[in-house]
Image 1 (cartoon, one colour):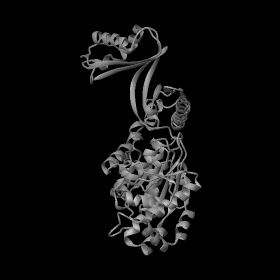
Image 2 (spheres, one colour):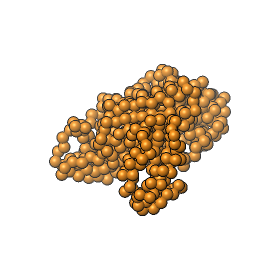
Image 3 (cartoon, one colour):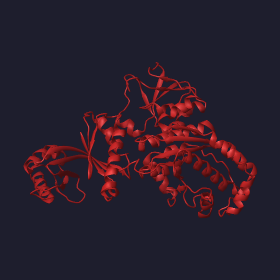
Image 4 (tube, helix red, strand yellow):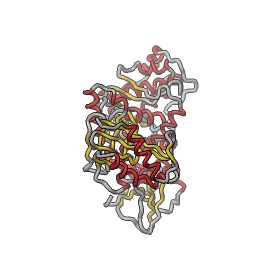
Length: 486
């Protein structure tokens, strides 16, 4: 199976050296992301497109590769193609007709051809010839150039031609690693997950910084969504997940700061801590999910006061997006259900929060704050590779992992619906419940507490995170199923 990778259009207008570097990075990312499915995937191409050739024959494996290509930043489209040497138009017709004859019965169609190179025919001539022959020699309902039922798509490139069998839309953007890294403040809600996704899409290697306000359960919930974002859209590069305990900072604010300034000062403390962490990680920019005027601390006046604590770039991808747009994006990228099921941990609630904070007043209020508490929080941070995120929690919570199933065990497949549909988990004489991970926290309490449940996912990471989360919530009847042959 061969894939033709079309580049994000903005890549194609770069200067020659920049374009070559971006394509080189994209090739490297494709190999890294698809390696676990096809170790021998051959990825070539330097200028106008990338070709990825796989020896896989299982349709489920090919579909998995296609799904991963759709989630790699820098790809505009991924085309599944069959490749042939270019000889004559009659030879092309002899290949196209048997592949499309059944599809065309009773349907309108058109032929679309793109051509690169020097030939003694034009693209339009190929379209007219192939289209005319198919129209006369099949049971097609006729040619329809606008909105046909079936499109016969072909690309001619010098002495080769490709018959496109499937077209997959990519996510666009720039290859991760082509831009500098950033540190994204993530709470698990709609805003921070979408802002993190958007920086990944733009080619920024996005590390995560989490301010823990709700204990271990809150941390596990945010790790789940951060791991999902990374594994789905950023797995070409290693990133860190940094946890900063912020309960002490919140206590200082609640006990020593004027009520109306609590929100702004909390954000200033978070930004200070994030910038110190970024400095230690050699990262130049901070990413937040703030949107102008969404809440009281996000007026232009307040954002300027918040940003005044640092000279480091604070990047806000959602600055002008409304909440509906943000939620729609979360639904499209798969984080909406996460966000809906993560409890809100309101650190401070002001009765009359200021919308026009004065920097002098804020700085005066902060003289009552013990900055030693903030320093201690930063010093107590935990930083782990997100690829090894489980190890950080297993030191605090052991989860049983089994490769054999007892008679009364109930298996729950918690994979994303896309993964589950591509490779359904099938076991003889055993019913398998399918509950996507993002619905597990709301649906698990409804299950029979007398049963013992085994959570399943491909790599065992999401299942272990969710098992730990459920055990933190008081459910002892849960473990992880990780078969040896997977």
